[in-house]
Image (tube, rainbow over the protein chains, first blue to last red):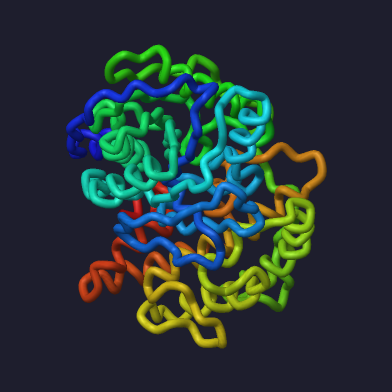
Length: 142
Length: 258
């Protein structure tokens, strides 16, 4: 995997963003675990598209079609929050640690040797997050 | 490669003015791609928040990631200083279930079917307890364990990696990519079955693969399918990719399946 890191491009940074305090921030999760609703279209080889995950998702409706076999699914099967911590966000919002939980979250499949191929869909998701009033995105790999 | 993916996505999302904070499982990828705020965590792949049984530990990792929003004034990658609680997963683990086949059951398909039949009862217990399952992404639906088992056995025994396996199921993937997801669905059954064993500590990634590729009919079937994919690579390069995604690193003839 180190060799793959060397082959990856460096992405040009965006202008620095100074967020509101986390206690006031609406937070969304961006996962690359390849999760989606059971009725949604599964991810396929080389996918750079994304699935929308509603903030009130029931884990009973979630499947995972990530193509990599180099992480086992047993931890996610035990508790999906280990990759998609929506229950933890709800608890932190209830406790006043964060301002709120976004209505929409997003899932990609991270098996991509050249991550710059996510430019179009990643930019699109950023615009949707901004339009939805999201202040902070928590990005979680698998 | 997921750590590179979230790194790139964090930069693209910040273009819209949304602040990001990004977990990293592979620091080298995060350093190369670059992130506004990254938190490298010392956990295995598949466990980005460290623990599947300790919600407070998960929140501790999230708080450390959120802290970077108020402390970082330029691109930063911090190290999370706490190891995951190690009592919950074992590297040395033995399956408590007896999977020895019935004496008259010697074909690979027969042994796989017999093995899954023994595990299925336990898997359904875990499903009932959790109220959910990851099984079914292949298109077989939540109750399609027998159909998935028969499909994988058919592919292993016939060597046909081009045509969809016979039966009524409308598979969610074309061949040969479907093979990858048949394997994942069956692994879900195996993981769920062992999770139902009373008092047993969960195995980690390596221990799971030691078990599956160290003597189960499933491991034998997957290896045989990988051999069929090898034979097909000259005509269909996708077969080589599917083989790489079918068998974990180090488990195909002692090495990588890519």
